[in-house]
Length: 250
Image: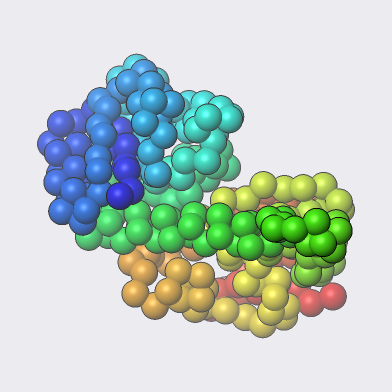
């Protein structure tokens, strides 16, 4: 059974989120401030955290930063819940390692869909890493002698970008850049189809699925964060006004 840590200083919102998550079969822990949230994250090691950015004792962004820099908790996916709608706040959270966000007021059904999607992506990444690790469990000496010493991973290369899907890694000029799961999926999709223009809805459908409840603006925010991380030396994503985005062909 998956466990969720809900962090929000408003009791009605905590109760609303908790009720809907428990109805879906999740085990829920709740915290009303940052201090308790950090304690529970280390003690319970939840499968996912739903984190409000406006808390009484510390910023949710600071909590996100601490969680992602702690070896004990860095693996925990984070969905930010915030009343803030400024792109800069959302991008900052995504850059710190948050996996998704919803803005208040929100539909419980939308939040549940986001939770399930993030958990599916986490499972996919873990399974992919395990399948591609190249580690075998030998049952005999013969198996040990025949074990492969190194696995070769297939990479996608375009301009000065290299993506290794199986390892969930992106390099620009041989420097590794860390992306969230959603950012990685969007970048991999666009780079895999250079020159082709995609609408925001098409990107959503390809990366999240046809029934995923997300707005066009959410894609704009993700693209903004991807561009910022790629930096000036890798300006490969073009905005096609009135349509969507594409990656420049070589």
